[in-house]
Length: 227
Image 1 (cartoon, rainbow, N blue to C red):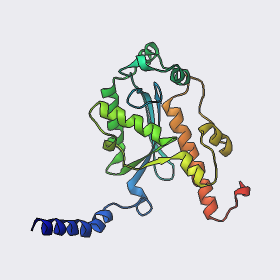
Image 2 (image 1 turned 120 degrees about the horizontal axis):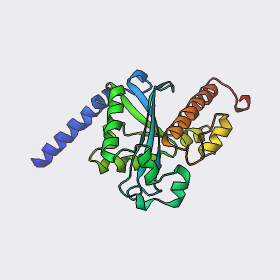
Image 3 (image 1 turned 90 degrees about the vertical axis):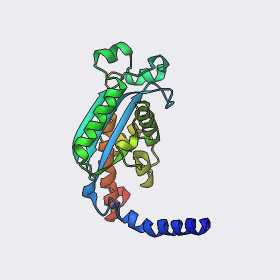
Image 4 (image 1 turned 180 degrees about the horizontal axis):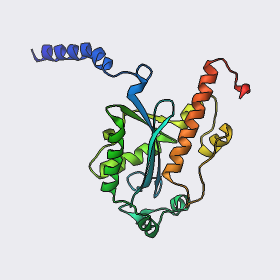
C-alpha cells in the first residue's frame, strides 16, 4: 500500500511538472518580466568564506542593457587581518581608509543591497551577470549567509558569465582588459585607489552591450571580418 501511495505521488508530481514550468515565463517569451544585475565585487583575497567582500557594485538593466539604476557599497570585513597583500594592491583596501570612506557593517550593507533590489524588482526576476561569475557569486553567497540572508533573496538561481558569452562567439579571451581592447570600449581603472566594484560592474555592462551587438550581427548574416 505504501509503495502504491509513493507511486501515485510521483505520478502527480510528474504530471504537474509542465504546469509548474508554464508558470515561469522564459526571458525570450516575456522579457519585460526579467532584469539583469551586472555585479562586481572586491575582496580581501581569493578564498570565499575565509576572505571577505569589501565592496560591491550593482547596475540593474533590462535585457537589452538599458540601465535602470546603480548601487555601490563599501563593506568593513569582520576579519581584515586576513587580507592578502595581492588583494590590497588591486583594490586599495585598508581599515583606516575604509573607515574614512564610510564603509558599512556587513548587516547594514546587506539591508541596503536588499532594499535596492526590492525597490526596482516589482515582482520581476533578476539574473546576476558577472565577469568570472563563479568568483563573484561565491563571495556574495558567503556574504549574505554570514548575515543570515541568502543570495536567492535577490537573484534568480542562474548566473550569466561575460567571458562565456564571448567564448561562444569564438573569442578565446578571459580577462576584462583584453575583452575591452577587443571591443574598443573604455576599460575600468586599474589603479588601486580607483578600482572598485562599480567600475567593474560598469565594464561588464559595456561588454554585454557589445556582445549583444556582435551576436545580433552574426544572426543577421554579418561576417566576423565586417567588424
